[in-house]
Image (tube, rainbow, N blue to C red; front, side, top):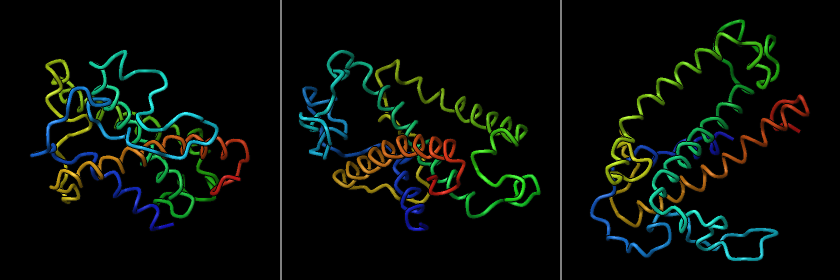
Length: 202
């Protein structure tokens, strides 16, 4: 469990890594402007087509100018979901000090939303502050997207590699883990709500 949680946290290190430098230019005709995520093939039960360049709604063709914004939104939601999955599981094992946070007061993490209204308001405040701080980063989007989507040039631990191939590999790992986490947190919340049980919510 500890290894899985650590892998989730480290997998999102590329989230704030410096902009890619020295990489080969991507052809404009490449799928989704050469962004990672369309490589495949991936197993897709119940789907008969190929997972390579998977875009059943045709977003890449219908709105190519919005692709950086789409990827930015996907990465932001994926990163939030990765943190949410960790934040949903860890309190099942350890709690921060305070009677209101104890296992006796809140036996199931899903109940925290209703039993801790003041804490929820504080969380909402901090989320709003962080969201507001990212607004300047979007300014360049209107000027032609002067940065890679999701890049905030923040990598204090130096997890992001310097080799272009390794960079794409790290970006793909983050993207896949984020997509998985978005599905996972939905399943975890649903399972916890329906069963009323803690981890593993069955």
